[in-house]
Image 1 (cartoon, chains in turn orange, blue):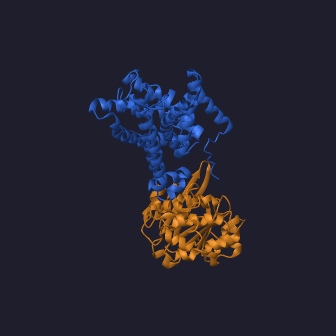
Image 2 (cartoon, helix red, strand yellow; image 1 turned 135 degrees about the horizontal axis):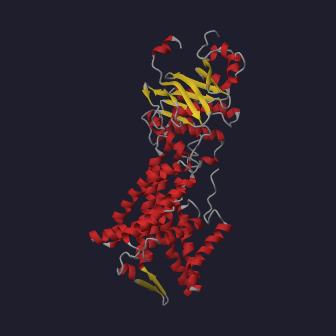
Length: 255
Length: 291
């Protein structure tokens, strides 16, 4: 950590998180600190534990050890709906829209327990201009990218302080992915912090202010996107021999 | 004319069956719980009504103002305790738990209320009287009132589910309880509310059947639950207006069966039930499965 980051209290402080899925240790002592206003990207291959990490932060998995601190408060034992009301809101993998509800109803559900803030359904319609005309359609009639936009809108109207984005790019065409990630600056401009999980490394490197690479539940690389070479990222991503010693967890100064 | 009469009587009886069915359908549609204690809870509501009328002398028709809230609270508590704890352990567990509840209720009623049959509002003009259409058709006021009640309940439910905040949360929780949590809602509380509403309609069903016929500790499983199931399956699972359609089809089939031979009444209803299961298992109001 650089000096100014160490002084300010992180918005989200995850300490030594261990999550067990039966016999499998999905997360093995993961720590991360997300400061306000950051775009913190967690990258890693399939099964690295990225989604488990995000879901544990959202409260959907209970960790066997470790803690999650949000704005200095320990939220490890809080149920997911309590965390959402405090401002940790997740866009889940696979979008998970309410299929029998219309677009607008999906947004209304998201706004039910909203914190006060800049985001309203109206504002979401302004950001995604196609959405207003199709607000009374069922979400099943939308394309994948449109569904993803509704899922993001549903999270935004809750006025989160930290937005967790789980694999936004999953199953979407590259041009659609570009368009959705293109919305990120607008979202960040309202003062949100974003913690995202992405399998698409180049996409993550483009948008992130901080990257954190996982491999089999452990941290293999952490730092600013510019600090690590492509080779280092590749090694950390695939777990190639010698990578661990070249870039120990937290170590990035040599790059 | 006898056939017209059979059809009219069948349609009206369908209102009663829809009242039986809508709570069962709601609980299945939202929580995916097949509540085998559904009929027994209706009988409990009927007995509670009888007790309240005897003790407080409230007019029979207004007893529902007390019984419906009582049953709604019971529904919320049941859902938040034994049904919710069973939900996390697979679909079969809820079946076993509600089956157990059914046995407990039935035997509890036998123990504390005896096996005697009881009616509600026996001798009341509304229960006894009828009006004539032409020379051969006699229509009981009670059945008309029950049918109207069923339609009002279904309209109210539809309005609540489509337009209110909790209605929206109930539909969202039915789709994806986990995603609802991510929007800050406790799906367990939402399920509790859905169960409270379901048992509110069960209370009306119990009172209605107590007035239409007679209640006995076993009525819940051998009549109410079975007819509710038949109506739900015929109409289509999880569809509110399907329960009315299912109830009407069941009622008409029974009356037509009875017209042919009085001993065919129940059989005819089940034959239609079976035919729907074989030919159109998704029910008459087709509701395609979610993609």
